[in-house]
Length: 462
Image (tube, rainbow, N blue to C red):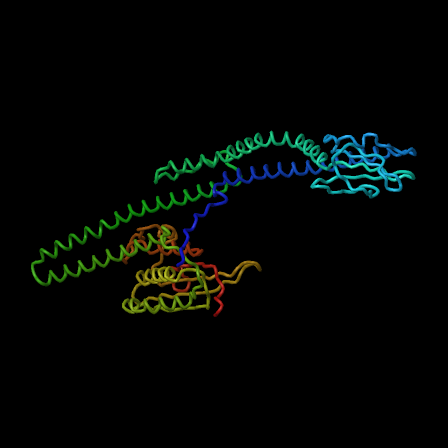
């Protein structure tokens, strides 16, 4: 039977806090630098000690060279432990030892001329040997002596670093905390705000790395505030505009209740139906405009065949055009692609065609034209010009800019409407990178609506 061991919780190695990361890495760098400095100082001191002691050993051996034979009167004297650090031996040419310092070190009875290292009973000795015509002199030193001296020298070098490292760490902590204090201030400002407070965040004393983020945040606050204000104005305008049709419907229902006969009742019912239809159309237009202006629906740009989309709208609106005895057609159509959202572009086209049909007298003409413009310069990208023109009364030049306002209708217009169609068209065109303009149709004499789109490449077939 296998017993499943409980898994240990994972401990994050590095915190996600910028302050924590800076302190962690800087303090780790200081610690590693101190350790590396200690190692370098120790190696350097050991190398210097080797050179100094080797020089002294060499000079001692040279000073013991003599033409006279040495004798060790204290050969039988007990060894002195304090002499283990430095051992001297002298032999005659026939191998007889004539001198040996009082030491417990059992060095080998042989000599390798020059410098060499010999390990005896877990102790390593540094040996220098020199030979003359009548004797061989050997000087040996315990390597531990050199290591102790190197450690002492290294400690003297690293000692100030070890003392200054905590001070340096405190300085790093103070500098990092002070540098990030403006970031903490911005965090507190944002955390203390009310939901409707969209005023800019203070940009004073912010680091260059954080300043662009706060600037973009302030720009976002401006866009959100603009959107909120637009929505507030929209709701106020919508409430005002809905009050009139709803009041009319209430009067029409009262007249329906008071109808004296069946004929009057039918007239009242037809008026109620027409009022409901107008109110429904107004609500639909309000919802479309709210989605387009408020950015509720995110546009996913994808290549759309604008020519095919126009043909589809012509098929959908043909029945309405025939009912009003209007010639609705496609005057010219290049095969073009635009980057956008198909449903939004359909709303744009239907509003343009619906307005043209609505304001064109019976027996008139409404034409759609799609052309690819030739770039003025070599590096310029081609653009698409969509035009909807009619043979209606048109719009006076002084009124053309005002028709893009919500709920505005040209005075004296024969057709009814909510005054939202052109506002919706303008909103959709702007979200697709298009430019909307109004002009007079030279060919038909009425209004000509132009929408200038950037062209996109056709998608590669799979």
